[in-house]
Amino acid sequence: PSAASEFAHPDIIIGLTVLAYRYEGLRKVDFEQDLIALLRSNFENESGPYRLRPSSLMYNTWVEQAGGRTKGAEPKPKTAA
Image (cartoon, rainbow, N blue to C red; front, top):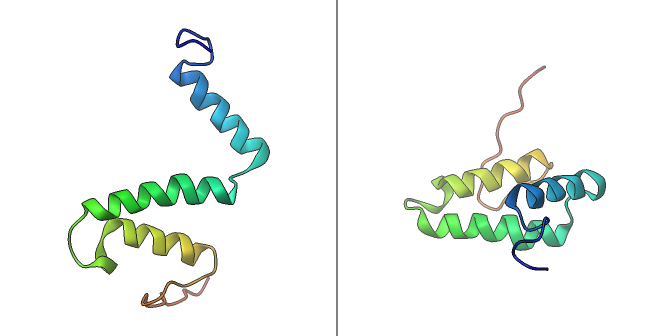
């Protein structure tokens, strides 16, 4: 399609992406190629100890919310509900 195509508009692309996610979910390959690649790129541009960089903390949060634990991360105490 040409650049002037009705599907080339950024708002349309974003809308179609959101619809695809709602109907199909996030595929593992999308997560690895897109989100992890972006996180890794951000991580490389941050300074400070690896474990304290914002990207590292975000990744650790994702893993903990999924029920896992990353190597070297200290487990957070469980709060009573």
